[in-house]
Length: 251
Image 1 (cartoon, helix red, strand yellow):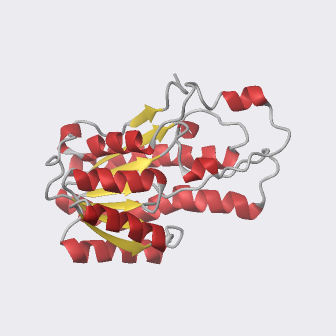
Image 2 (spheres, rainbow, N blue to C red):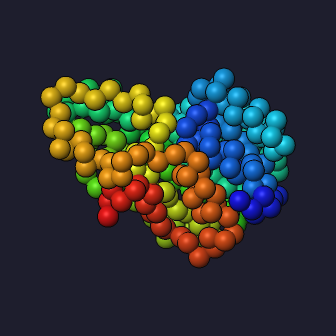
């Protein structure tokens, strides 16, 4: 780890209360960034920021509901007011629901799309003017499920596939103006999100086995390390990439 790689950078991380979001906030801070931790889970978000400061890093915490554009605008505005700039946006906030394809309720479908895809867009839209000014970058957390079909995860795959192409669209439109946009596509990662999945009855175990190739799950810290690289100047020539980190799931 290069503890100076992100020195003087300001990063905003959504979903920072736990899992990949918490690990990412901690990794960016360990590499020198000032981190604004954002989540709708206020207590967990505050715990992340406290842990960063206790380790000698710089962090603040803000409540943010990514499904509400006004909340995203306010979160970005407060982060910029506090630090004077914004160099890095990392969109981690997300949920997953498993159902048979015809069993998603209207509300379940909308909620997955609103948090995973629309929320990512709202945060990007609010951040882009500041990121353009700083010649910064966006790292979105998509999923292996956004690259290949996932059984019983139609809503999740649809949302994460959208994140992949949102990322690529931003990369093409804004890259020549100095703003890079990339996404990471994790496979199964040992997080509260994954442990909380409610798998429906009557699933085909052979189809479920497609979702994990290696015998063990990924670790949040491994995803965070990749995000930190993409957010750094070392990845200057990486733009519009959807980088798999899934143990071979989509190989």
